[in-house]
Image (cartoon, rainbow, N blue to C red; front, side, top):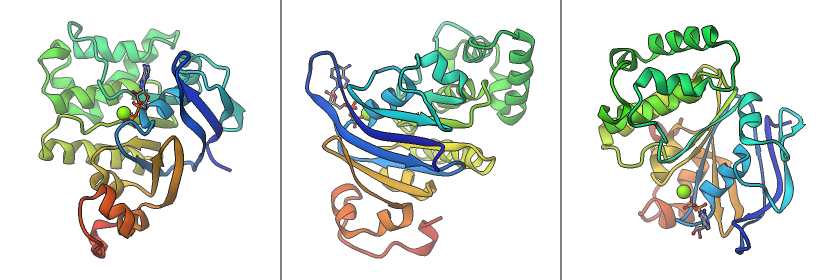
Length: 248
Ligand SMILES: Nc1ncnc2c1ncn2[C@@H]1O[C@H](COP(=O)(O)OP(=O)(O)O)[C@@H](O)[C@H]1O
Ligand SMILES: [Mg+2]
């Protein structure tokens, strides 16, 4: 049984067309999944539906066996399923520490929140160093790290990251992906959406291709990297065996 089960989800915005057209996906505990697919395929929409920010028109979402479809976004967070949006959504004029405190807003015990922030500062020393600086003064990579840390305040079991590499230089992307790998190695379940299909698949256990609102292909990430069709469509190259070291 998966930690997260998405069952025949149909979703769209307002009175607009269906963007997700009967999408099903099972995410197993402790694994990293990377969702790739063309622009506009509905990747961010899927994450928003799982996070409780957009109600599906049809279908259900289960997290650890519980039907979370009717829950509000803050209730989903409390269940241990966190979300890092692609725009990072930091409060630019608040300090790094204040931003992290916002990550614990659903927790009653503010002392626990501060304890948790200290743990995260130990894990991400650069954030400790910048803790009293305003978020807007951080570099892009540091902002992404702060957004991840903010989601980690609740000690989630699963984290969803929408395009964490957006706007970052290759070196910084490498660092952020290293952080995501570490979190996975610590037992966190990861659902990653990536434009950078190759990099995303390289750190993932499973690859999922989303196309026209449905999950068109799901396989171990290495098999997705090696699939000739995927290579032409998403990796920008002709079929070529992927070197073993590119696979996890
Ligand atoms: N807030 C919104 N209101 C209306 N349409 C939207 C909204 N957000 C996304 N869409 C539309 O939904 C489709 C899928 O978008 P999205 O899920 O962001 O795709 P992806 O993340 O795969 O690029 C696109 O056609 C987009 O224009
Ligand atoms: Mg998107």
